[in-house]
Length: 196
Image (cartoon, rainbow, N blue to C red; front, side, top):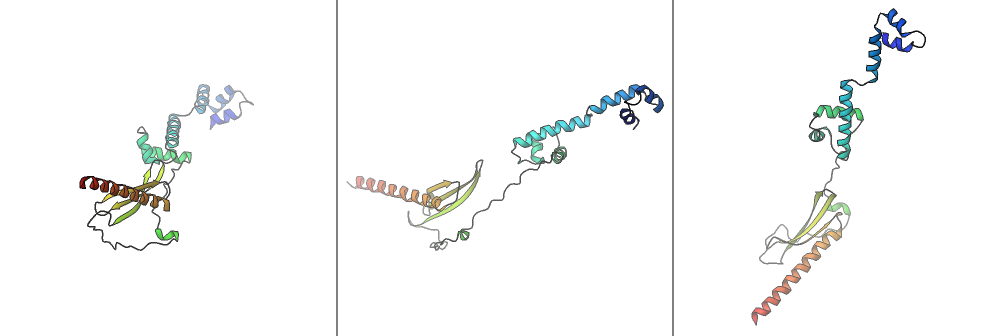
């Protein structure tokens, strides 16, 4: 308090006189003035911590919170990183919930289930089944449509796309038809050669 008074009134009175009247050492006032302009050890620690946390947070594209940042910055604990994030007003982006699309939501006609849960087949190309799944990749979601032959359980057609459209399923079916026709032609040609 006395040092603040001296600083506020140094234009009016000499520093030597004010120090004598307030019973403080002149060297103490000069030391206080130097200390006040320099951050303390705790402040320096916070500044370096804030800088490191901000850099790691930006490198993670604003996706990492305190627990994951503590893995990136082992020199700081989780509480220290959380306090630094709060001080800087940084919040990790919440991951978007992504669920499968309900086939009834599109309003298009849905084909009847002809298999009625009977997945057995006595030979190839009698029963085919298809499905669409979604996979998380570094670039985003990727949809995969497959067609399998229920006799051999082999995948005979597939298609991938970043969007789930009718074309995705029809491309998988087209591939299955093309591959099976090619196999049948190859088998017919091989049978014809063997029969000669």
